[in-house]
Length: 128
Image (cartoon, rainbow, N blue to C red; front, top):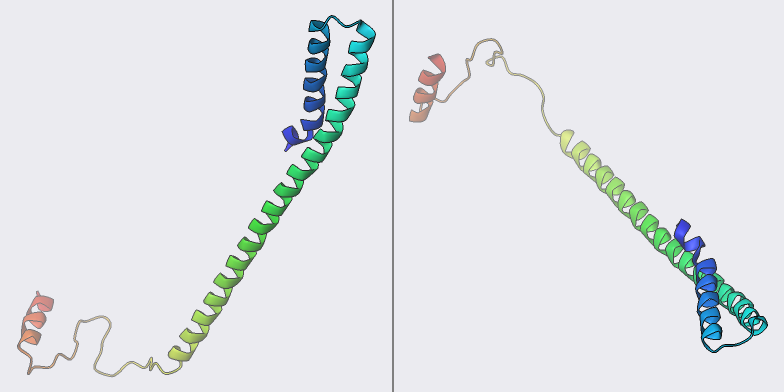
């Protein structure tokens, strides 16, 4: 951002140097060259100020737009999290967390249905 602040002075100096060199190449007297250089400096400094203000305004607008987009995405993410939490709460109310008498934590004694042939294979693998 610091380089943007220097635009008017840079434009004025460049215009002054170009004006001075053109006056020197035309073999004008020094007084006329100095007057042209001063006028070029003043005019191009004013143009540079307008140019700088335009650039700073555009930068601020871009930052504001990015900030609004970030706030909007954060808000949408927050709403999505809240909706997810609400749906989890609604689903969680119907879940039964009770543990039956047949299940034990220390031993692996689950009630496999003996009618299913795979249950025997699983039970044999668990017993090993």
